Image 1 (cartoon, rainbow, N blue to C red):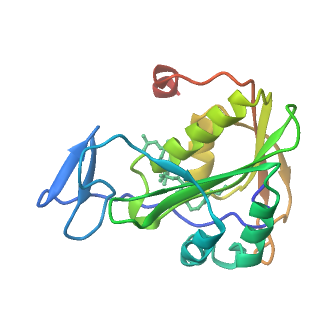
Image 2: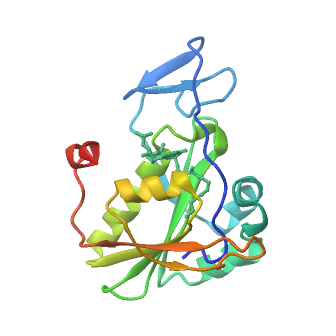
Length: 203
Ligand SMILES: CC(C)(COP(=O)(O)OP(=O)(O)OC[C@H]1O[C@@H](n2cnc3c(N)ncnc32)[C@H](O)[C@@H]1OP(=O)(O)O)[C@@H](O)C(=O)NCCC(=O)NCCS
């Protein structure tokens, strides 16, 4: 969904050699906190988003979504609907939020990606893909046949990420986002089977 709340831009993050450790081709800088791994370990660790963590997300919302940011009340409303919502977040080794994702499941016929965000300095390191993969796994476990979402049509990073995970554009909602007036692309992913790494590499 991310109704009226999709936006932001992605940039390439890079870790410096000094003080950096590598895991699975990913790097983190323990001096600057840039990057997200200082120590090799199993990654990412996702935890359910708790109400007391909401204030930590608000600066990220401001930075990543601008005028389309979610308010504290909107996060509260999402978490209150615990029967239909699945929210996860992941942190770096310094405890700072790296990114978060939300799913809404009303029935096994269709579920919606509510939001997806990765901290600007951690983008392009696989965090978004890992969050989305976890969400698709969750949908799959629940037997959901179609996962859908709305994304700003001009959001190159997000549309590329979704396309890479099997989502296809099925429609446009003109001037869906306000006050920007940007169009929303509706994307859908049929089937609950996972796309393998090799299939992804071919796309
Ligand atoms: C969209 C977003 C979540 C992607 O997260 P990320 O952690 O940077 O994504 P990943 O590193 O996992 O990228 C996976 C793939 O997505 C695509 N992608 C990601 N960022 C991209 C960019 N800036 N340009 C083009 N493709 C991009 C690529 O195919 C990438 O694979 P590659 O790095 O091997 O080329 C992140 O840019 C973000 O938070 N943006 C602001 C908030 C937002 O727009 N959220 C989406 C709401 S619908």
